[in-house]
Image 1: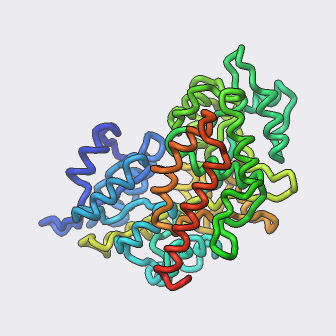
Image 2: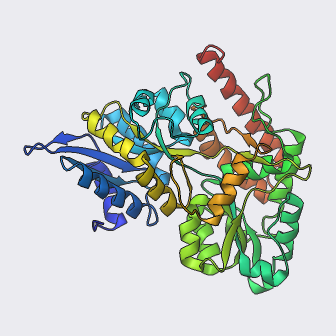
Image 3: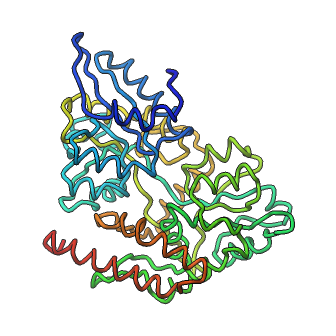
Length: 431
């Protein structure tokens, strides 16, 4: 594996200096740029390794890696599109795909997948449907590498001490959180994500509890403010400061991990499969494991559709053939399997074989169970990210503080999504 500069040195400077365009050297070498849009100590070495493997297999192509932290990636891509400095290839999740396609920034990849024997027919049909349903023309704009699932990471040793089993229902979940809360010992049953990235995790708990299986009803009205969801949010928000640290109000992923992994003050942390490496490195497999989203008390297993990660080729790139070659390489059995294994998530390529970690096996069982209801997040709405991040996150903090009722918050939230859904249908001929 190559040795690269520290992350701090490559993030902003590299994004500006080496982040745009492609070039052909005088020696016949083609240079392209790859943006990792969720860069960090756990993920960067994975991409650096597979890029090195690609360059070994394709010695006439040089790939410039640019790491961009997830909190900055959307803005940087928008700026690059507006300024004509896009990368050739980027790691793109379905959560941000709709807005990129709306800006006509990406190349469709259906024909490339169909023409590649290593990829054609190798992706789960439901996964490809998720990718295509996000965009109006129902084409694929990313070559998938992995998919994720919601997970609740828990302290196995604490559960054993308390005589508790991993909860299967939400009633069992709240009982366990209460029993494991011991403020006098600086132990809290749960940590709420109140800062950046809070809304997806809140929605997962809300729909998981209520058992509602559609984000919009048949008329196009958002179900978010259904009374069952309101009751679920009230219960979730009620954990704040009672079963969680007070500082959770500003919690982003980094702060949650610090409390769970480093400080060791949290019994259960909600995130997804992607944080596996952080927890195992800090606590070890004897102290940490995960359980899937609990079922509603009525028996419905409702899980949110998690983003599918893949690789996109930008339309403004100059060396598209090399860019497509890189994107396809990342999704092949061996390389896609490596990325998924090291990230602790589910590989997209169904040819990937071998023994997988227990948390991945459990997640696959839940997702493949015909009884599981997948609530499709409205990633097809270009406004969705702005609504959830810019508008909803600050108001969710007010709910936690008791300054805004769960009902008022969800009423406003549902109204915004219903309006966005109606506009989307109007723009796209009612589809």
